Length: 83
Ligand code: SF4
Ligand code: SF4
Image: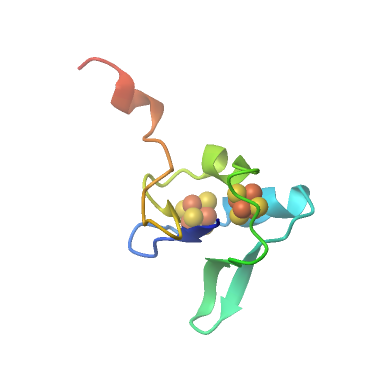
């Protein structure tokens, strides 16, 4: 199992890259083609054992399960507050 980036939603903020590096897993990398696009190495990501980047990604829906395409980035907190 692995996560992947939905590039239609990702803002390229690189938070997932930093988090994964801090854990010394280094599954997130900056691609050369297309240049500087954030990608997740499907063979290195340890999801669902690790879910760290999901808690830091600010862009709803931009990290998805590679196998299912299911969005696993929760919506921002204000989405849960009654309007
Ligand atoms: S789930 Fe963990 S291992 Fe996978 S990309 Fe996110 S931080 Fe890295
Ligand atoms: S943390 Fe989310 S928005 Fe930022 S680069 Fe990673 S996938 Fe894209």
